[in-house]
Length: 326
Length: 276
Ligand SMILES: [Fe+2]
Ligand SMILES: [Fe+2]
Image 1 (cartoon, each protein chain N blue to C red):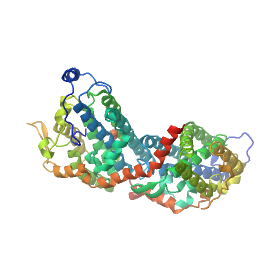
Image 2 (cartoon, each protein chain N blue to C red):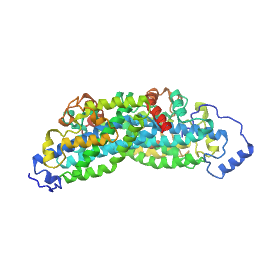
Image 3 (cartoon, rainbow over the protein chains, first blue to last red):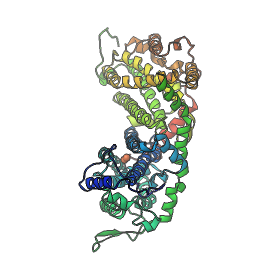
Image 4 (cartoon, rainbow over the protein chains, first blue to last red):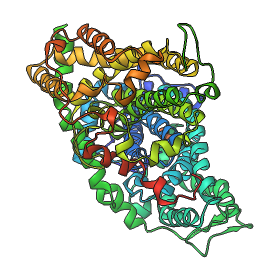
């Protein structure tokens, strides 16, 4: 789902034309590729990028919601949001392990991933650069950010790479609970006091552009790069960015309106003839800035990870010594 | 109320008949609930910041269980005529809270959203000491004269061994590893010994608790706890145990508790008419 962010180069000649043809036959036949199978370098590299960004985004994604965990307004909500954030960390763990296996031939480990994140080379998803200002944001993340994630993740449920595909199966099962968790918070607010409805609408207004950006630009000319084609050629995902965004709008806009909420775009409407939603483009220049870690909370979130990493260095050292010594 | 050896109080209705019994019972449950609640609050601040991702997941699961235990104890209080659980958790001022003071101590320097220089050594030592204590206290409570409380204690004790095992592993791994890790743990142990002395106290109603067989005596509780701790840390019981900041069981608390209450009740307090 984090296909549009690129780092490094991925071009290299296909090692062996025969192996490549055999590989493509397997892809075309819908077979699953496993970690130890032969694969072309651009397939491996695309997967590493995709899965490490996905994994690290799960982990960075825990941070904006986590701000509201200790503050959640009831004991049951405290329990619910804690469980949800724990799941996201678990998704990160699961995905990073898949990425780690793919990185083995390059001699890279999780340490490299975390260090690339802190250096700014490994990007995380645009939505997790945004502030969570009120409790309504905690609901909005669960409802619409996870809702968007469900759309893009289910699109890859049949991905050609077996370990990723199986991880996604499990993740998607849990995501259903996340969406319910988010929706429950949103419903309580929508049916609540004036103050609650106000913070809900204010939250949606703020999150709207980020939600449109979530799926990435329609074409490469918007931001200069796009991995959509290679992802589709290798049967990692099925649909392109715009198709995913349309699926999201199809599913959620009617729900948004039925709750009596509005979105901050007066032009938004369904074009019956074209069979798609028409909306105002978000500012894709801003998007580029956000994913370059120049978003409103990019630095602060990275700072949290950096402190957690460096501050606990003595613990990891002690653990690795213990492992060797015993 | 005169009770014979084997008399059990099976229901809240029956407990309410004797105000002396009721007050002692409530005080005991407040101690259990408030301990679990504040420990799980401190745990929730750690979320996303643990030494590695696997630990984040494991620690969070323990924290959720512990908050679940707090909820069960608050529910018992609700049955005994106290306000509802969310009110008890979010609205009470610090001077009526009954948790031991050491458990409210901040996780380290900084705030959980800004420059959180949290100390894993403190967390390991504190949670280890807490879980050993919780084990012996709840084991005693399974024989309590108040049946609903004894039942909850039994339920909690089914999950609790995993928590204790988790922190025991952490303690042993770090204590017997690098010099730095050993020293950090040692320093936190020493600090704990100076502050944790109110943990085995039973507060203003200690005599009644023992008399009504709600609970064993403070002396026995202390002895059993130190014995449990010494299975992992032989030298701990020989250290003098003090209570530098007073007794949380009697309502003494530090500014750290107020800091916690401010955060955990921020949204709750923002709209008192709201259903969340
Ligand atoms: Fe997730
Ligand atoms: Fe999720």
